[in-house]
Length: 122
Image (cartoon, rainbow, N blue to C red; front, side):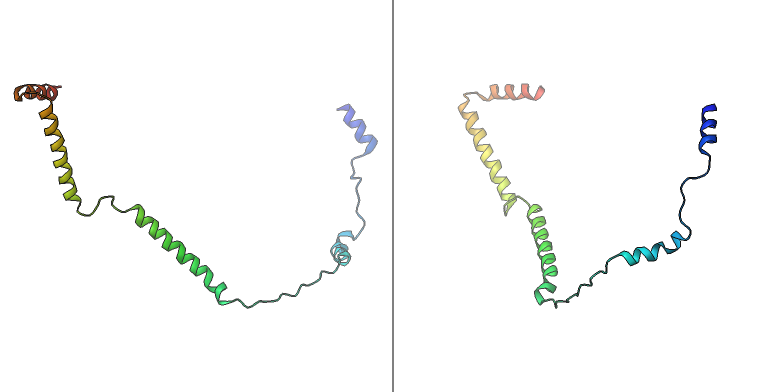
């Protein structure tokens, strides 16, 4: 504390920075006077063509049509027409393969019955 008191006594506590009287009253006008004049650009309004007016609507329409087509393709059923007939044909084909496998296995009916009964028990 003693050192701080010595510095305060030596330098003082008043603010050493000063602004001339009336400086801020004239500051705005002086800054504005020093700025260069800004050239005003002439704005030429070009009349829009029919294409420029229709283009955003056309693009939006194309976007919605594309989205609708994508949704339609993604949500279609993957079955062929007459899907029930196809399932019946698959069942017939599977039964043909099963019958052919049973005939070629050289098992008699009883052996096949025992085999199926054991597999159902597991």
